[in-house]
Length: 108
Image (cartoon, rainbow, N blue to C red; front, side, top):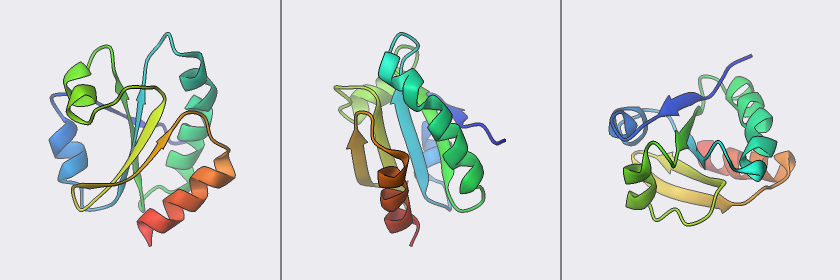
């Protein structure tokens, strides 16, 4: 199974804003219970959409510059980027089916 990539303050622009395919970014923290709940779902999505959607995680404790840059106030926050631009955002825990609807819209 694919695993989500670790995005950091140092590699965010290279991995996300300059990506030639859409990107799902999961802003999370080790201490966040809801973040841990959706972690396996994020990994399943990384596997299911491999080659069509890049999936990665930003730890808000270690990469707080990126979290601040995008105004992340609550976690988990899922942001979708296409052509370097933020196009969708989901805050909190959502059902996998609901998340897949957003993904299908973004990768279309």
